[in-house]
Image (cartoon, rainbow, N blue to C red):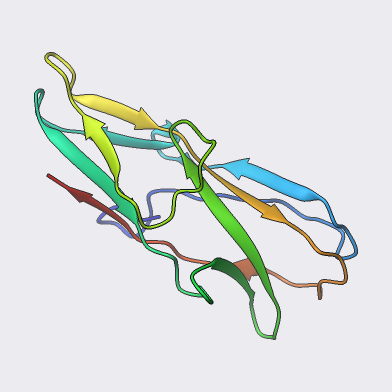
Length: 130
């Protein structure tokens, strides 16, 4: 995820055994702490949206293996964390006296086992509109 300098933060799902069929989950860590920090004029209504990433397939976000074949499907979750954050905008309300909101973002991948070893990555673009 990116700010004007190239990145808003990183979600690292860690190192997992390739034969695992576990679910792994991690939160976005950015320079401002956990999640996305958005600053805006109090009283403004805004929306935060996200694309499906560089390696999506069939409408699903995918972590792609660097230098080889293989992909792992994953979902992003924001704010309440119970519904996958796909293409729907996330409404943001900066109430009276509120100029900064922190939005927790996390990723979850359910591994299927027999996954080739390697580094799996994706880049997702976030858009703030008002």
